[in-house]
Image (cartoon, rainbow, N blue to C red; front, side, top):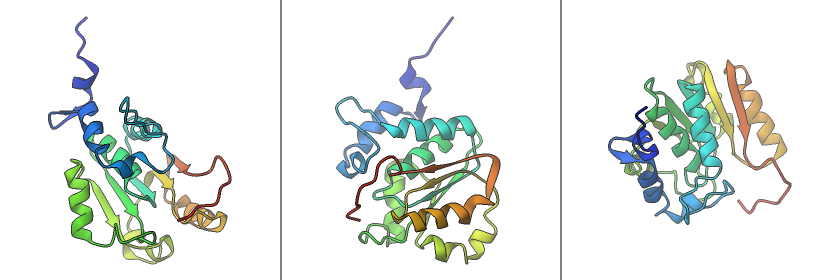
Length: 185
């Protein structure tokens, strides 16, 4: 039986996955924020799980609420881009931590520089988003990733806001839910 090397199988636009990871990790911020990433062996940590879920479930829509520097939207965006069905990541972040997500042109360039063009950033809180026309026309969501404002009340709001939008085979993931710690964000 003929088998391709893993890096050839996991390539997009001629860039092998390991090379894509190496380029991502040139941005040290993408090695932070509790996803167990590691530069030494190009380990995506939990990013492997996010990527795998996007590939296995093949959703047409993923909602990501919050991200310090876009690691999770990038993992899901890459998974959907690698699927033959395509798909889109709706990334909701009001940029409360700093101004990183404030400029739509800079946000588009940030994701495009990583080779990912299927992420649509929404500069709003979840409370603002649920009042928008975009929310009303969102349709069914296959994966919801909640990593917004780190309080029990906000996580509950985020979950309940998208509970009815979740497709029957969809899943919801919560970041920062394993241990209790005070966030400085």
